[in-house]
Image (tube, rainbow, N blue to C red; front, side, top):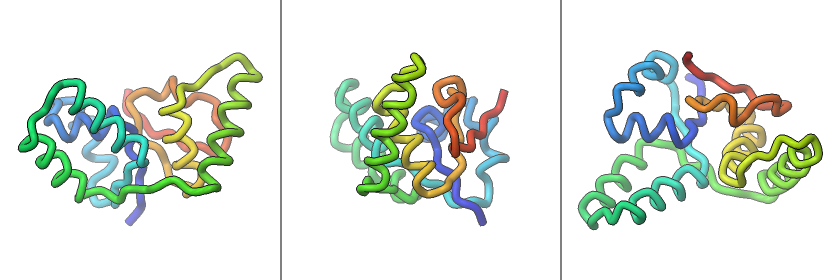
Length: 132
């Protein structure tokens, strides 16, 4: 069994029952699925912005129990800082959120499953899996 890190977009497809989840089901089936702490934070931000009630937030928390949540450590922070600096130096900025997700994948040598591959183009040591 492999471990795949899901980007926020892909996990949201699964959580919402979005038909785009079907494109990724065969890739992740039978594997351990992980989320960066940043993805979890983005999901809770989404819930707050949309004024979800406690019941719906509890459902989200219950769903998150199915994933390995990867927290931040010093190495992830170092990778994040280097990645942001490298991208800035070549004029290809990366959002702080995407940089945290990429840094998490790089730190733990996990393939990143994303529907937004363009956000992660040309990042060394990052394996991106997407469906066109």
